[in-house]
Image 1 (cartoon, rainbow, N blue to C red):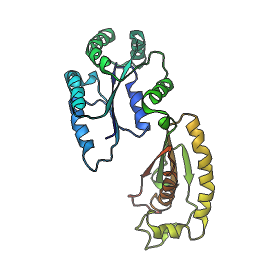
Image 2 (image 1 turned 90 degrees about the vertical axis):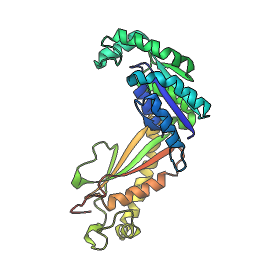
Image 3 (image 1 turned 45 degrees about the vertical axis):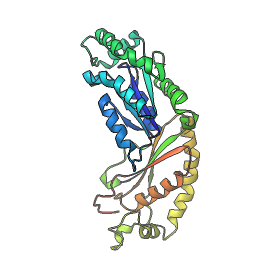
Image 4 (image 1 turned 180 degrees about the vertical axis):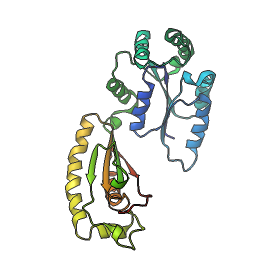
Length: 289
């Protein structure tokens, strides 16, 4: 594993937001992990065949008495030569009180927010001294915290990285409600009505050839790729970190799958883009593919 970031600090200081920033940057992310389990996770990711190169972990006082082991875990990582960084998130007491009041959540260490913050400060003081990066979030918005993390921990090469998920689905099984962009490809030739192709999926070359038998699949790519070439940099410029591009056909097994696979291969070549693929309904039996 090339990079391990341990996120800790005060409850209400923005640790969940910080973890989301790393997840959007392609880090394997784990929330609320007791310190003793960090060692096991590092060993798992260090094995040959592990595809996890970067991980971000939140470990804080929610772990109760287990959190007191954090200092020893950091010593272990130092002795083992594991490259790691500790991000400590701080905020002034009034800001923390205000955030608890807004969310109406109970402090993990005490029924009284003030008592909880005081107890937390005692536990966290040794860790703050060992942190590689300390960020005071008192005056930071969510976007401000994101920018600070990108600048101080991720670097400019990841500042504009966009995570794009190309997802296939079948309208018959319900819409893709979280889609940022949605394309309906039910106009394409349907392999469902070919008895030999029906059991296959849109990942099969025979299915793809059938869909493009009248040339409309190629025409679709000639239209949709320039549109995405224009739109994706605009989303990056607006600071968007993740985009869900949904492709729908009737059953989500043939046409939408073929289009998603093609687009994923096309945009995986972009160096500033993290591309993922999801086939929501490919395993479902539909009345129409």
